[in-house]
Structures are given as C-alpha cells and as structure tokens.
Length: 198
Image 1 (cartoon, one colour):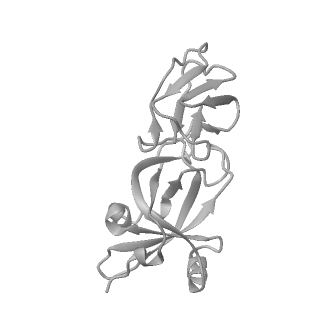
Image 2 (cartoon, rainbow, N blue to C red):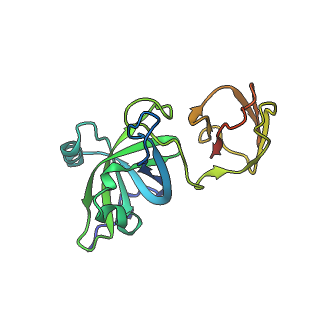
C-alpha cells in the first residue's frame, strides 16, 4: 500500500515554491535571489528518530521534512533542479537539501530541508526570494510618488503573517497598519517597488 502523509496527522499547509533567479547582478555575478513560481500543498514535519540520521546524510543542518505530492513538483524533480529550490511558508523559508520518493508509484515525495530564519531579503548567503508570484500578493491603492504615505489593501492582513517588501527588502518598521490601511513614516519614492503579502 502506498505511503500516505495523511497518516502523520499533520495538516497540509499552502507553501510557495521558490525558483533560483538565473539573472546577473550589476557586477555580472549570479543574482542570488529567488522567484515564487507556484503554490503547493505540503506537510511540514520535524525530524524524529531515524529521520534525523537520514536528513543529516544530505546536510548536517537539515531539521525539517516536507511531504508534497509528486505531481506538484514533477517537472523540477525530473529535470534534476528541485534541490536548488526553496519553499516559503508565511515568513518561514525552507532550503531543500535532499529528496526521497515515498512510494513506488511516485505519489508522494519527501523534501529534506533546512529551516532558515532571520533573513532580510537581499542580504546574507542563501538569500531568500526578492520577488513573489501573485500567490499571497495583496493589491492596493495609493500612489508611489514621493509624497503619498497611505496605502489601502484589498483586504486586511494578519500581523503574524504579513510581509511588507519595499525596495526589494522585507520591512518590519517604518510603517503603521490599521485594518487594511498602511501608513509609512516616509513616503515611498518614485520607482520604488512596494509589495504586500499576507
């Protein structure tokens, strides 16, 4: 009988699959950023028992196993690039280190990952993404003109899961939220990229 992740009792979570950016930066070096290309359903599990040993064969830092349906990542698995991808769960980033198929019919696969915490977009090694697909992206009204400081989202977002991205960096200060309205201390400038996720 094929292994089913539902036997773990762990709920499925919507994750964003993050693809390495193939562009180059202004110095002609690889642009170490990622682009969210699709959402997938997965079960995020802590490693226990023999799983700890198995995960550490890929990387001693591995501390999570994420089970997903094979069909959701089949193209990345088959072209051999899946281990280069990351997963995003709200504000948690998972760096894929190893892949194991869980049944002969390839219904489920396990992704052994390192949970990366405390990142700022565009800084550090193994940088998490600086661009996102429409999954989780909130639309808003408000001009980016160097004067306006007030932006109104299409719906309210949670303080616990909201992400504010300005000039390709996650921001945790410099603004105040009241319901759907965000007021910045200083106005975003013409040409700035502003994104709200949540």
